[in-house]
Image 1 (spheres, rainbow, N blue to C red):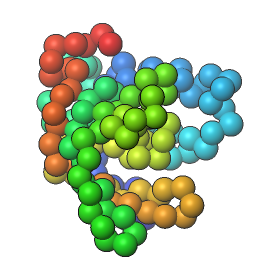
Image 2: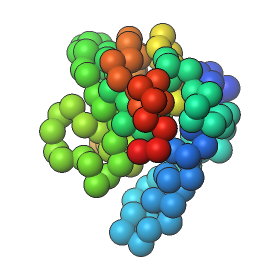
Image 3: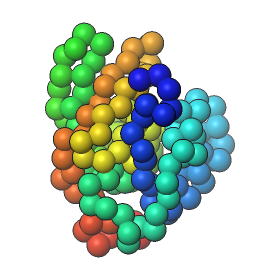
Length: 142
């Protein structure tokens, strides 16, 4: 999908957005291309954490995501969306500053999105299920 209006609507926690915006202002991340992430933050609808539906990917959410690559190969992954400090290099944690992390933030179960990857590749991400969401678990201040 190439235009913003073809992308699914995004629902973001006000606290997550504040923390991500603070993160983007840090000197160590200023050299990264965060254009896509900033665009997602701008187009999202913000809600208070306590009002967040349980089927939305927020920060520290673990979701089952199907990734379809350029060759139409599909792979399902349980991914946890984390802040850079928590990205330990394991395949199950994806930083919000990584292209896939930026794509997942705010998506709901059933949503799909096409997203550019490094090297000119693209992937289609489809959210199949939420396994854990901090807000739904009552952990509103993480």
